[in-house]
Image 1 (tube, helix red, strand yellow):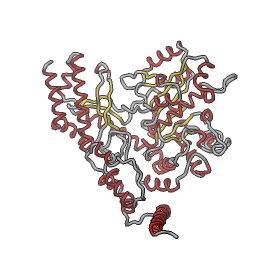
Image 2 (spheres, one colour; image 1 turned 30 degrees about the horizontal axis):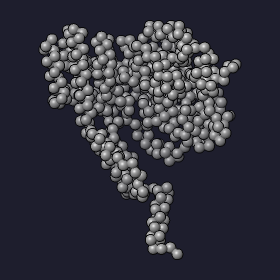
Image 3 (spheres, one colour; image 1 turned 90 degrees about the vertical axis):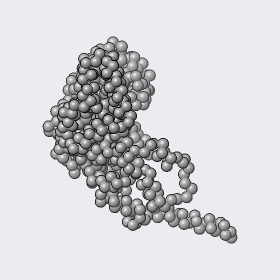
Image 4 (cartoon, helix red, strand yellow; image 1 turned 135 degrees about the horizontal axis):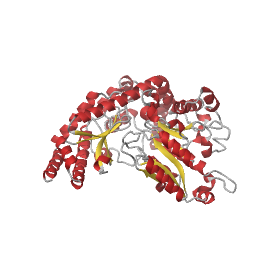
Length: 553
């Protein structure tokens, strides 16, 4: 017989179990907190983001206090209570990446159709590792890879009918971002560089040390400009070749890889018996948006007999623009190309791809298992670094169909046009200095009052370096104050332009991909930076120090 205490515990357990069943079977009422939020987002996403995200910046230490307990709650919470918690703590202190004045990073506004389609994707909860848990999502992902492969390599329809759904090959690999895409490209390049031969079962089986010994070389190198993405360092670390194998080639005045220095490096490596694992070209550098001379790099890769990879995570969609696609001439000769769909294809985070010119390239990294990824199956997981992953390709597929080639072309053209407009705006203002001119839709600049610019032109080298050092501090302070105010946002980076004898200077970095960003917003942003420079207490003090330094020249 159950005691009163045990009977009460049993009753609570049954009630809790009933409530747990409900969260799997009964949707939230439209009148509930979550239901109302869902309607608000569906009807007016822009308004929801504008009203719910707090504009002014709060200290991170304060935010951390809301997420400080390591204890998992003993009892279930009401969905409405937890939703209120998220609204007050997480949502309020998130970054309004869709705001037209948020021009500091490669994150932009999303098309309105992405939200309801994302709900469908989440509800289906497909796992793209294998056909058994994805079914139609697998051919859809293969088609997305085929569509972007055709954008880059321009093969005819017969080619894609032959290869797109071939069970023994893949035109590319879908990844959670450009980092994994670049890692996959170098993984393939590494395995192709040290394949199985008589007396050696390949680097994938026997490892890097035995590969070097068998092929009688002293090491490998990946050649990339100094503007290369940090993901290549991660790739070198993971693949066992070591970060020192990433050789950063200096860039020219236009932030493109210096071809003469590259050729010198190739000669030096040959003399040292170091094999080139991959030559990497960049189509849209992260810091300045410049494009390497891909046609020339393709020639050099051919001469050296090495894998040619193009990191087009940012600039790849420029191929949609009839006016500007020539900037990427030579990309069609690459052995592999990275594209990030969550950048200029305007889909949510978590959508990167690497495409391979040869549809059999990915067989060099194939992995199989008896219970999954069986040989001869069309399971996508056999060609990807990741195992379980969502059907994000559905969102890319929807964007490619709804926006279309012409739509993307218009978006690319608008971004480049407004970047050029902004560059002109900066040059026309005597108190700003344009540091890197936009080739795509990125540029860098800094606030340098006209009287400081005159001093920089006339100062000896040592004094110029000191002025730039103090300007660096001023740029940093303006950027931090502008971010904290919450009206607009630019990022900052450090460059070593030739005009300052390679002094390292801190600059504002602007990315103009959001179609909602206008010239007026950019004009107001410059005005705000000027105001901060003279009215912010710390910035004004820095400006006064620069004045004293120049006066003492």
